[in-house]
Image: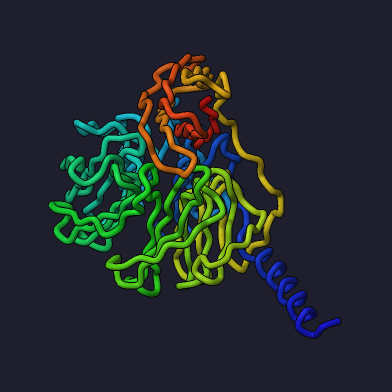
Length: 415
């Protein structure tokens, strides 16, 4: 047998063995959807927010065990962030925004006029925290400099249609990710959010920048996850100069959302439809590890310790072993459409299992956004009927349904 081929087999076997000793599933109740967010103050103390499970859990031993703390009574839990071991904040996909001052034992609603949901948060110092929303529009940022006692609301409609992520280096310098009418965007501020500059645009309408990461070992290196839609691929974007220039690489999942790198070249991505997709060459090639499900938030401490939220909470550490069970995707939205092919009128019946949000967008065969057909807040569960008018031109179209749990893309033929 060829010696190079033997070396390749040995390398692959070593990789498989090494990987099986790193990412592991923590001992937390399985989510009916996914843990949309996690936050760790240190290697031991952390919290997890379970989206459609409506629960907050806390760990004091690095994820070996989890304690139930809070149920939001039907409000989708979007993200969670703490300033210290006592003061923390919980964002939902409703106007209700929560604060705790006792480490998560009790939570109280904070009313901030203009807020429809909080999709992202970032603590910039021991007293300053930023938040943003919403993926289902509109775009705004909230800011507190007194540990959440008071808040400033900033309308971001001049820069974005939707915001999903904020990431601050300090009280003045930070980034925001989302979308505008031209595509997925990254914004940068150097004055604490008073003004913003667009530093990246995917230039494909309908795409969104979902998560951002600054490499722990080099603050000039940044990564972003660009969520796209079928038939296009999602993207990894990378900058080595604090966002002045970017390189984009395709990722084999349109609905990519999470991004986490331990070196400039070695990292993982994932989304509602994928587990850990791994690269060793900064996105030139990808390996589907077959592990994990519905990934969203990566927290990278260093090259030997990281956490990730998804259908479970996952931990990257040499000391833990992997449960190799491949998890199934959670409950999805039932969408019936017809007729297909159609003369131009398309009917849809959607069965909502709980309160939700819905954005419906029409794209052509090449992935060009034509128009947003619908934006709606669903206040009651049950079946709803919709009717959409397609363009006059015959051809192939895609309709993207974006809701709290994920996405569905439907291929439609216009006769």
